[in-house]
Every structure is written in C-alpha cells, then in structure tokens.
Image (cartoon, rainbow, N blue to C red; front, side, top):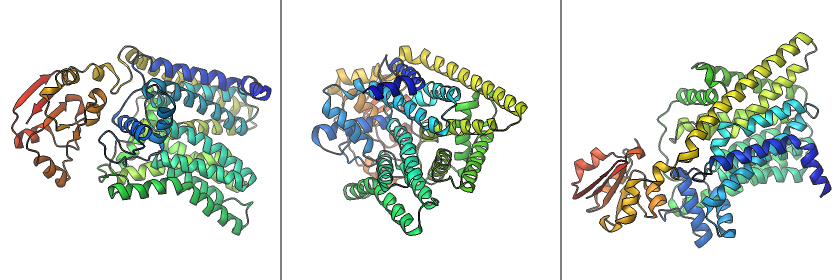
Length: 499
C-alpha cells in the first residue's frame, strides 16, 4: 500500500494533477444534462440494457445488435447489472475515470521514453488533460472512451513484451488487442501493429517468431471473430447493411487534414496547414521507424510502436472510409491517434534537444514553448466556447435542451393515443430515447427493397424532425408524393403525420 501511495504522489504527481483536471472537466461539462447522446449512443445503451436485463443481444428496435461490435454494450451492461442507477447517471463518473486513466498511462509511457525530462512530461499531460478532442469524446456515450483506454494499455503491454520477448506478455498484449477489436472494428490496427512488431523482432529465432506471430494473431482476433460469426447467424451479414462510400480517397485525406488543423493549428486559418501537418507527422513517423530499425530497436522502442500504430490507424481509416460509407472522418473517429500524435511531437522535440549545438537547442526550445503556448491558448478558447453552451444547454445530443425539451416529443408523451401504432421517423433513435416508443427507420434511397417494404404499409405515423435530416434516407417530399396524410400536427422542431 505504501508503494502504491508513493508512486501516485511522488512518481506520478504530474499525472495526478493532470488527471484531476481532466476528471473535473468531464464532471463540469456533463453537469447540466449528463453525457451527450448521439444515435450510436442510443444503440449502445439500449443494447446494454437488453443484455443486462434479458441477456438479449438486441437494440431498441428488438433486432440483433450487429452494426457495431458487442464489446462496448457488454461493458456497459456490466455496470447496468451491478448498479441500480441508470447508466446515464453513472457514465460521467465512468468516463471521467477512464480519462484520468489514459493520463496516468501516458505519464507511464513518457517516463519510459524520457525518464529525466519531467518538465516536458508535465507539459504533455496538461495538453492531453485539456484537449477539446478528448473532452468531446469523454463527454459522450461513445465506444471511443474505452477504445482509447485500450490503446494506451496496448502500448505499455506491447512494449513490455517487445523488450523481453516473453510469451506471457505476448498473450497479455494479444488479449488487450482482442478486447479493443471487440469494441471497435478499427481495433484490427492493434493486431496488425503487434504482428509487425513480432516479425521485425531480431531477438527471436525464425521458428519462435512464427509461434509468437500466429499466437498473437489468433488470440487478437478470437473475440471479434466470434462476434462476426454470431452476426452472420442472426442477420446473414458481417456487420449490418453497409453501403459503398461516396467519398474519394482524396476527400477523406482532406477531411483528416481538417481534423488535424482543428486539433492543433486552427487559428492559422489555412487550408494547407492540415495537409502540411499530416505530411510532417507521416514523414517523421517513418524516420523514427527507420532509425529504430537501423539501431535494432524497432521491436522494443516506444517511439517505434507509437509511430507504427499511428501510420497503421491513419492508413486503415483512410482506406475503410474510401470503401465503406459512414460518417465523415471526424475528430471522434480519429481521436484514438490524438495521444500518439502528441507523443510523436514530444519525441521529435526530445531528439532535437540531443543536438550539441547550443544555438539549435535554444531555438528548438523557444519554438516548442511558442507552439505549446499557442496550442494551450487554442485549447482554452475552444473549451471556453464549449462551456458557454453546455453549461446551460447540455452536451450536444439527445440529452441537450434542444431535444430533451422538444415540443413534438412532449406532445407524443401526453397524447400518444393520437399516434398510430406503426411509427416511422427520420430519427427513430431519438423517438425511442425521448419517448420510449419504438419507431422504424425510414428506408434508404438506394435500397429498393426497403422502399417497397415501406410502401406496403397501409397506415402509419411519420415523426419528422427538422434537425434529423439524413440525405441517405427518403425525404418528406417523396413520402407525401406516395402517401396521403390524414392528420397533421406542426411543431417548431418537426411535423407529425398520420397516413
């Protein structure tokens, strides 16, 4: 016990301060209306409730939960099962603790990268604790909250294995990779990173390397493989209906650059700044990998593991978003590499400090302090703007005032008898979350079978949200061309039709 207290207050004093700041930020941001709830969040929470209460792996539509991996709903279901309170009540604390956890693990990683440079480590931790990108994620009911935690845990475990080539540590890293893979399909990047680290490990003889490679790969994919097999059995799809992407590789690359600009250099207001930073990070990650390989350290250096993961994750997200259609590459989807980028930049700075020329050292230090101050100011202004909104309106999403106090939803709660039992909506998740009623999603424009099935309904209710517009679904004009309304209720946030 004394050793633990000593580590927390003496060794990790900077992490304790930074993690406390992060935890308090989450509690403040979620004070008004709790964590933010997006359409994905409704699926996660409803699946978690069904798992905990009925051991049914279904969502609010009572259909099999297949669009996302089951890892995060199962994780939430454990809390739902243990605690009598609603998940919405305890999620701010859970998310705050996970945020604090990634700060502590980042401190651990940095101490192994540079044991003596406490000032830079403190700067890095404070930057992570005040990051608008991470604060956004940990203020929401999103799977990234758990995925990012696994990312840091994976870095530490993989580095431990690579430095000792111990099979026990290999299995630990593989299990963490498997858990991450079962939380988000992007967790395949963990498995790829681990397999490459094993292949380039010069300490292992070829036969042992093969054993480690296949063992890591097998354990790393076992949980998601079980998930995918189950999906095929219950839905005849691997992960639900997936449509072809409408974005080109260049568009996705531009979106990625815009996220980087938003994270680090948005005040420069330059469209080319994000592309420059993207190229800078990719080139330097490749240089660090080459340097590590040349020095025979690629398998046991944190810099090489972080660089490799950054390149693989970014490459995977660019590739998958070019093939499969989902939301635009956003800060949320790219957030798992945020800490990797911060650590990469810190590693580059520390490498430059090793140059013996005093003038270069002073110049590098001045530029670092200037950029760091600029970035912290950017964090401050962004977080201040966020607080001005969330302090009285709540985190954007279905718990915010705009949705929670919806006149249309209040009407449905009070006069549900006027609503026909079969309900369709352009935001069926919002209907369920705000009223408890199950609604069907409108059909996709480019899936004729869904449209034909929709047209077969003789009478139904349509709940149309003005803020729920989805260009992938049929619109209000199309519906009114094919169906005649029998009753209409107009609200400032939407329209209800009985057909």
